[in-house]
Length: 253
Image 1 (cartoon, rainbow, N blue to C red):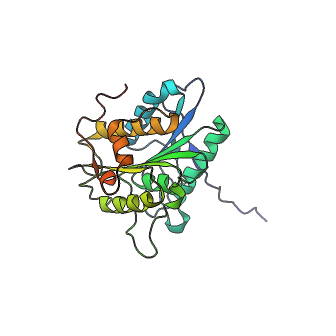
Image 2: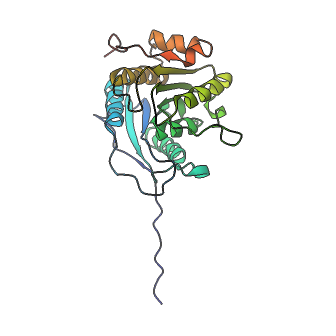
Image 3: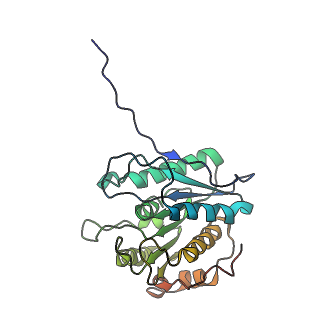
């Protein structure tokens, strides 16, 4: 009688560190790409999207002197897949892997699209001290569909969203930010006016905002004045902060 074939178990994977590895790692960023609402297909083995690659490179370059390690996360599946929340689970696994590799270092989760939802969902991991969600995909809110926010208590949280995003409703990220702000004062949200889901018009500004926020959260570096103001302002002001054109030109290189 022949042996029955077994289906190999899929595992998430931590991608190769972006840029030259720092001599001693003092903090880590996990870059979470987008995905689908429902799909059990295997994702591409390559880091997808020019914006995601630009995020990873900008963070690695900006944090090299501080000992920052930047890794993309390769998911098991393309989809979130309902209550399985595969992408958030894989983000949590990746944070565990950072601790295994580098020890007790702070972690920032940076996600785009469905990866933004994964970053927010996995924000409660004990190693995570900050979350950046860019144009996050979120479900329509309702009695059974509200995204949890209590896991974000004690973390610094930044959401950035284009006001003309036709794929991921910016009003949903505002509502989530408003609920999160009620349990955590360290939440801010920037609106990228007239920009769409890909944030093509103000990509440099969004990259600079992400680097400024992540390095400040991970290493205690001074934040830019707009980010400080957004964190300190009461809602809705600090949750509808306009991202100024040219943001980042005068910040640290």
